Image (cartoon, rainbow, N blue to C red; front, side, top):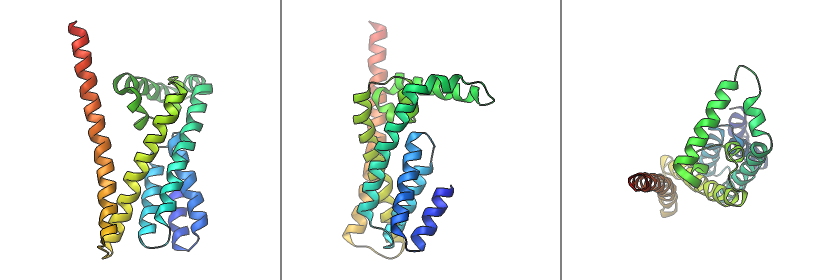
Length: 202
């Protein structure tokens, strides 16, 4: 949350260059494995862009690149040290093991779409094929960026009395991307359940 507080105060103080760096760091950390901070930072940056303190296109580009970079870093950590990190003795060992178990269940249940819902470290630890991870992590990063960023921007614009076609379109785009991702996930899960049921009957 320190990154988010710094991002908000930086945009308020008129230092967009530093704000973009903080956004990049927050989203990168989120995709490596720190939950929630990326969405919160991108939401704050989108809202700041809606008030003219940042440029929305730069915000979206920074977040998309950061998501891919963070994912690759997390994958590399999981691929090389994931099992050792999980098995390392300590009071959080059981929590780490449960996180890995949930990740493995997610991959068995969702296939490659699990990249959308699990930390990149888990993808590396589970030994997902690297070329597939690079592609699907990029898709996930773009989906995340185009869902959260435009939604925050559109809400910020409309809440402050701006109702141009561009403002409304930004909000609609963000909501549409987010809804599409949810629908695709549900559809994919239903298909896997159906295929699994057919395979069991055979």
